Length: 351
Image (tube, rainbow, N blue to C red):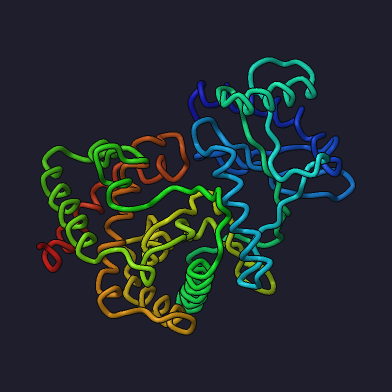
């Protein structure tokens, strides 16, 4: 971890410790960093047994309205009986989202008031949003779990979500991003340019450009209909699955937005797209999905297109997130693996 990141974490640690009293249950608790990526996640613990997870939204990630929209969908999924989503712990003011001003070390009351005034004036600089969630007691899913059972469950959960969002009446101010070929592979991609992925050798850029062109062409032909495109979780990978004694819980809806339904499968195999059991993962996910929702054959036939779309997007993401643990662990391996997958894909899907 770089000195710069360590410094920022130290500054944010102070902010978090000063902000915990916004939740009466968390007053005097300790905060420990769980994960650093688009946001920073903290585990909150107090001596009286209170436990929770606190998300610090970093600057320029999501607006307050986008966060509120995420929580609205999570609440709807839970209240409509679709799945048990992580429940938000409201602050002492009754609000789900707490906002504080990052600059300055004045009193907490002063920083909260300053943040409120800045938001009213549409001035978002130096404002940080905080959301506290219930602590889910369990373990992260992994490759030691039975793959067939796990992916069958994921397929069934994805279908339930897709059914729900097709019928759900979204709030009038609902606002989430879009995950498509343009936002991931276009001129101004949300996660950066795959050409700048770590370890990618210049000689392979033409091959991956052909991959990108093919993906965009095939998805344009597939089109966007209510049957294949809508609100999705967009990050159903192992790290966001908690295995409890009763079930597999899906967490972290921070990436939820509008996209093709099958992109949810592609996110479930993030970083393991070349796994030798990939065909088994696909079959299990499809079987689970079809227990709840129809999946036309022409959509299923593009599953590899979505896998490669996600693969290129992650290659770009790795280039803009060099400090994240998995990026440092994979180093240049991911780029080399992407080249091999691209060659295999283009041999059967080139247009």
